[in-house]
Image 1 (cartoon, protein in one colour):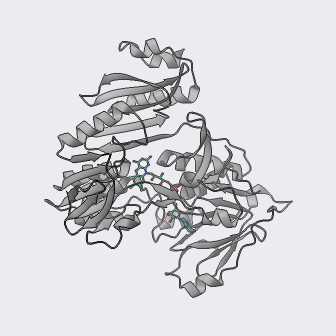
Image 2 (image 1 turned 180 degrees about the vertical axis):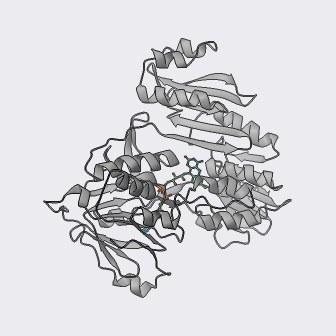
Image 3 (image 1 turned 180 degrees about the horizontal axis):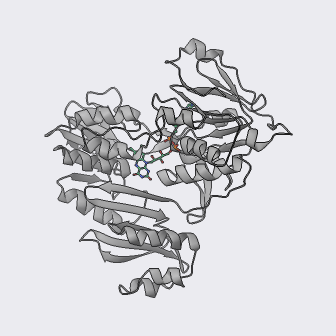
Length: 436
Ligand SMILES: Cc1cc2nc3c(=O)[nH]c(=O)nc-3n(C[C@H](O)[C@H](O)[C@H](O)COP(=O)(O)OP(=O)(O)OC[C@H]3O[C@@H](n4cnc5c(N)ncnc54)[C@H](O)[C@@H]3O)c2cc1C
């Protein structure tokens, strides 16, 4: 088999238009005599999920050809460090998941700078922007997310940046110079990590958040309180309950008429799933591509994993996309095994971490899903908040308490019955619940 790194230069709209129009609405069929181990597998999206799926397929002894297609110019890389080491350390290089040669060694055909513009479930082909078609027996959509933009800030007098890829991080790193005034629009993980890096680089930082507290998506009162205290203590201005309406030559204007002085703004207001191909394939994909616990979509032989996949969350009791590194990696690995013919369910509670200044924040499950019990000292920056619903731990957050988080992850997954009175007792050790 020929294995290669295939780089397609920026496509013209004329070549893109040549790609075949998919006829996606009919129910797609798989070849009936297909040996799963020999199937031709195409993975669209060479991010964390796509890359880990390709590796897992080979680990599961998949022998058929694997094509891993990504529109970015780089081989798959670790995104989390873009808002951490890459901004803090001027010398830091992007962390590739594998070097180009290692993809060749794995017998995976990696296409970079290659956008898939069409997918046809009947003919079982995908088409690249340059008109090339690739046939598949099994298809994995790992197309991830793109940043949510604020068009009202486009083309104004202030430089406005977003952070998703390596190029964004390198450009932002150059702009974080001592004394510069940086406005972070959005007090979520990306905004807060950039605030931390920018302060460390000597910038003056203002964080603007629409909700009443920081990291509102998590919904943990103690964590919100701690983060406000942390960022204020490092000199950041925090403006909550405010909406940015436009840029001015001197900064940003808020909905209530206030002005925020700034030399540059970084917008981090969430992401949106990349579902155009899923729509062409006729998959259910309004808020993400809906998948079973084995990663299967509604079309036979077509799977989805990572940020783009919408799955049932036991702790949240609803369908949702999980936008974090661990899910992208582990759901993709389980889905790859299913694609290779070994049905593997993935049902782990969502878990992520964030590093801000010297604080390591970790979140599992649904911290806002029950009553919050706080153990430790929020003011001292070392605590564990546990969310209990109907005598079950459904989520939690830790700050500088990684050992507690290791136990919480197991407890949320295990659904062991707990007594709130025990958790409220500071002398009670969490590990006793695991032993029970
Ligand atoms: C700055 C930043 C910091 C983060 N920090 C953390 C953290 O601390 N902890 C944590 O748990 N998570 C963190 N995350 C989230 C984590 O990185 C993501 O959840 C994870 O990368 C998702 O992986 P994915 O492969 O599902 O999607 P993505 O990483 O979005 O990858 C999808 C890939 O598919 C490509 N693609 C899409 N459509 C096409 C197409 N038609 N043709 C070809 N290619 C296509 C995209 O270009 C992209 O490269 C962070 C994310 C960012 C941006």
